[in-house]
Amino acid sequence: MERERFGSRLGFILVSAGCAIGLGNVWRFPYITGEYGGAAFVVLYLIFLVIFALPVLVMEFAAGRASQRSIARSYDELEPEGGKWHRFKWVGLAGNYLLMMFYTVVAGWMLAFMVKSAMGEFNGASTEHVASVFGQLLADPVQMTIYMLIIVAIGVITTRAGLKNGVERVTKVMMVALFVVLVALCVRAVTLPGAEEGLEFYLMPDFGKLFAGNTPAEQWATFGDAVYAALGQAFFTVSVGMGSMAIFGSYIGKDRCLTGEAVRVGVLDTLVALMAGLVIFPSCFAFGVEPASGPSLVFITLPIVFNAMPLGQLWGTLFFLFMSFAALSTVIAVFETIMAFSMDQWGVRREKACLVNGALIALLSIPCVLGFSVLSGVAIPGIGDIQSVEDFLVSNNILPLGGLFLVMFVTSKRGWGWKNFLAEADTGEGLRFPAWSYRYMKYVLPVGIVIIFVLGYAPIVSTWLGIS
Image (cartoon, rainbow, N blue to C red; front, side, top):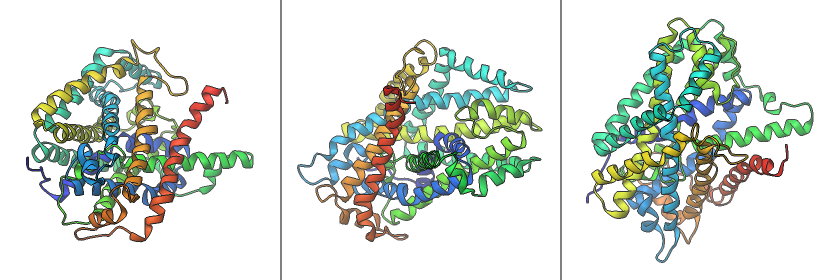
């Protein structure tokens, strides 16, 4: 079977960026930026993105393009004879499934809030009313299931249409619309009376905020938390570790060096995150809202902020439309990863892969749907409810361990090998991968990934041991 190809280089960049651009950019990034003092945290994040996340993204693109396969067969094709690296593919598949088991539900929240905003449900609403609307949504398994099934249906229909006619075409339109809506929201936010204070908070670094505390121990603890948050956000924002980017590498030709392509994807991904901050922080400061509101910032705080603006119903609806596009771009990309795995591993046709995997994802998403109502009592101490457990397994385990595994595979003589990786990454025109960085990639980068993994367990272990 001939390998499918993107219709254009722009399609590859936009689809890859769409996979990376998700709720981690436009939901998590703004609120952790608010928690760690604004611009100083952004600088820290950008540094880690360049020296930490982008190299792993190049590696995943290279593995996909060299093997011309998804993660289902990429390790099989590239490992030396008798190697066991290919066994990781099952962990990668499990990670993609786990991600969709809760991501389809959360994407459904965005869709639901877009509909509620468009219908004027938040007009004149108080904080208590908005919180009540969100609580009622979570407690209603029928409504939650309907929105989840809509998201799954969009993913299945898009991937069923094929790479060029479905994934690439739909994602192109959605990404263009995402940027148009985001630009409109940015212009509205930065021109609000009182927005200047929010812009200063977001764009003028005050590194003293990274060391907040009354004692040296507290100050260094705050800095350590900020470093860990920036390191983790930089790594997770480009969606590497589960093969989601390898599949798109397998769909492109060899006319361009992969480092430059990874930089372009990283720039688009980061641009959306930064622009989301330009919407949120000026709006919050203009209306006297605390920007460090945590996860509730999107679903409870921001509807109140938009409601206070002139034409607030329009701006609120556009914001959740933007959030829905961001979520759906990731859903479609991960669906394509799962479908491609089935086609490469078992040789099934795309139609059957979409039907079977779509039904499985919908079925496996039900526990997360019920985790806020019927199964609300099911929780793990220190982690949380079903959705939190699924998120923890992906974000704190499979992604960092998958990234570590990929780095070891690329830099090890018993794996693919550094020279083979460089030859693939540097094939074509454009920015070349720094060959001198071998020792950094082999020794320093894995240590950073291990730090992310270990520190991700620290608060959980503290809870289990009863340490405050």
